[in-house]
Image 1 (cartoon, helix red, strand yellow):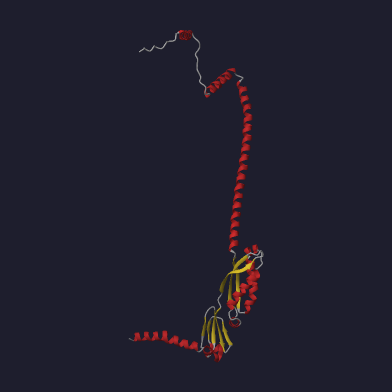
Image 2: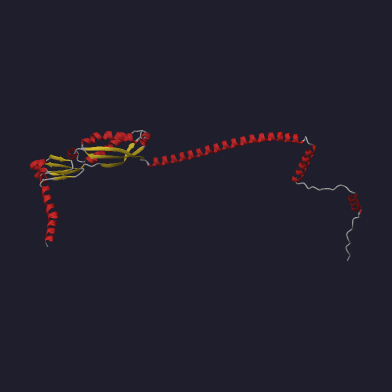
Length: 307
């Protein structure tokens, strides 16, 4: 039973009495907690009493004195976010030096550098900074050459930053990095014309490459054919000399020469398409057979019987 009473008392004390006690202490300014990346600005009767921009626990009675008891009741505590923030402005309208309507997308970072100026020097510092960046972009980047606008984004980012930074510092809103992320054409008809020109140019380049390749192939082929013709001509010119030298060597031996010519003659006869009839040597028996064949009277066909 004592254990249950102790557990219940601990629960009541830890989760009910302690939070209520700490709430009363914060309400009467006994202490306050400043989180990381936050800033507390205490204002009483239109006057800034304290600016707490370092994280930690602060005792307001020590910082503000007796006013710490009433600052949360009669005054106001502004809690500001000091962390880095970023914004992207899309398609800011500018014109190039050639008159082309361009759109520029700009990304920039900002953070609160002076909490008091941020609260009281401008009713909308964030909106004013955005408008300042937009106007500086249009004012700085207009009438630039189109090639520079499409290529040199780093220089354009630096120019916009130098134009915006002095004004934003007066409002307690410091500008960080600025980067031109996108440069595009705003006129749809111009985009279609550029696409058509690019396609035509690609076709021309492709045709030129194909024609150059065909020309190179023709040059290589004609060169190879010319060299082959020269070599064949040399070979055709050397053939009679080689054959003549071979015949000259063969002619020294008469038997070999006659045998070679007989072989060549027989080869040409075999390779030809004409019919060849071999006739044996003339003899007495052959002569008698031929004479008998010529003296035999022709036979008459048998007469058909009459009806």
